[in-house]
Amino acid sequence: YHRSIHMPTSAHTLRILTALLSLDGASSYSDRRTGASPSAPLPPASHTPWTTVGPSNIGDSITPDGGEAGTVQPVVAAAANPDVIYTGGNNNAASSGVLKSTDFGRHWVKVNRGLADTRIHGLYVVDQHGEHVVAGTPSGVYETLDSGGSWTHIAQTRGWGVANSFRNGSIGGAPHLFVGTNAGLGNVPLVETPLAREAWRLIRSPAGSSAWRTNRVSISDYRAGQLLSSSVVGGCLWVGGRGVLHVATVLNATAAAWEVQP
Image 1: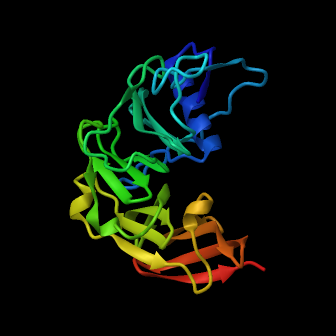
Image 2 (image 1 turned 45 degrees about the vertical axis):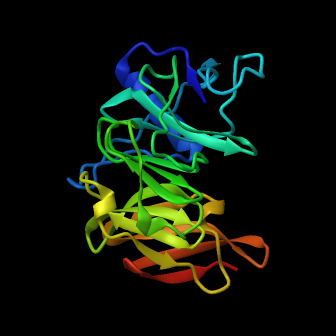
């Protein structure tokens, strides 16, 4: 994970961080509950210097920078306070779980209490302040309501396989959170109350296709400039040993109309 060293204002900091998250394919927050849509972030200026911000103080001190955290995959931040950053990942035997910084990457700590599976494939910040977060693992989805102080396994996602690539969208005009999994496209009403209490549903992949987890899920809520009541979801699924583009027009929480690209 890297950041620019030229950050004169907090607004500039937020734009750079949001651009980083977009480039990395990580989830970013937008308020679908009110219909408000944040303005598109400006990209970092050309030739802007970058510096590594870690995490380098996590794990065994077996590298010159003082440690390793495995391969960092998702990186998410709180919209109202971009100093609060969550990340995580896994690489072979290195899987440090969820790592958190409250000072924009200068220091990192593990926040894994209750997180039985520390192989992190996806993260999503539900609220504005970074207290309510979900994490995707090979064992399903975990949820924290206290800024990573403790995690609860969402039992409804057990058996879906690897969960990652969280995206916010809509079903029938209601905000929903989508997650790509081995079993298909999971979804749940997007609310700031505990998601473990909500009904998690699964739109199964079409016959012969599998593994939403292998590539990032993309979502569109507009067609020809018109807001859709249900999202259109795109992603690369495996068919016959190769990746094939799939586009799903969501019909309801358990069904979609599929277009499989040749």
